[in-house]
Length: 44
Image (cartoon, rainbow, N blue to C red; front, side, top):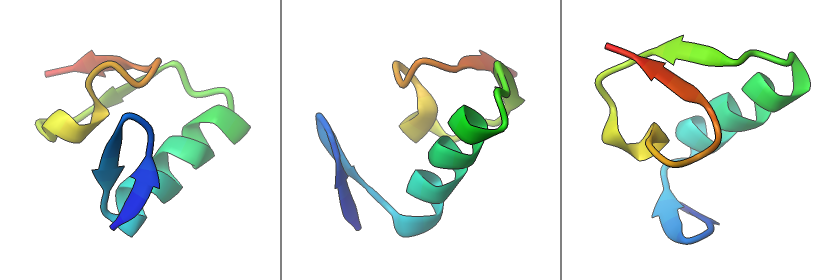
């Protein structure tokens, strides 16, 4: 798990978050609560 402020996230969640920033992805489909409040829209 990596420190992705303000909480610790698993490595692949951090990679997905960084990829969404790099690729300018604005929304994702997920049920994973780690992605809430990280600056990306969640589509359930």
